[in-house]
Length: 192
Image (cartoon, rainbow, N blue to C red):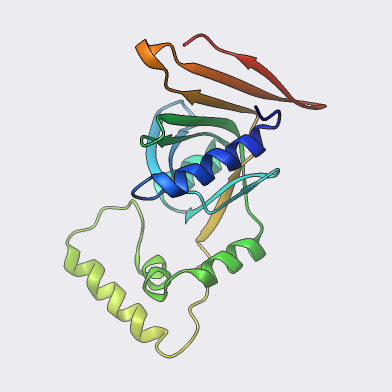
């Protein structure tokens, strides 16, 4: 049994990377508006460690706006093949520009261009409009490096709580809850 939730997360993620058929890094990201209206969507984990769990998005998207207005989030990893899930809750902060630039440079060129062409989460009159915008961006950056758009960056959830859920027969599940303290992490169990 791991005493450090980040070590345990690393172990579970490594197992998921060998057993999950698609996107073991996929996580549900829950945000809310300042008045408490929740929303959730799937995003991909792009980095994690003691400082937190990182993903990237358009800052003007719904999730980007909600995260900037209410700087708290919840994450959920569900690995069906392992019958496990991990819940993470905590405050959210923007990643450093240098980190966002470095990650953006690793994306496929069409993904980079798509970040420029898309007004993520905004109404779109037709697919043709988006395809035309994509073609314009392709032409704009033809033959050159595609820089990170100013409205595109990443967020980091700094975990205050991490819960590890393991399926057990007859719904007698195992639930371990780690809570951040001034001295590190405290651990407790939750009823199934």
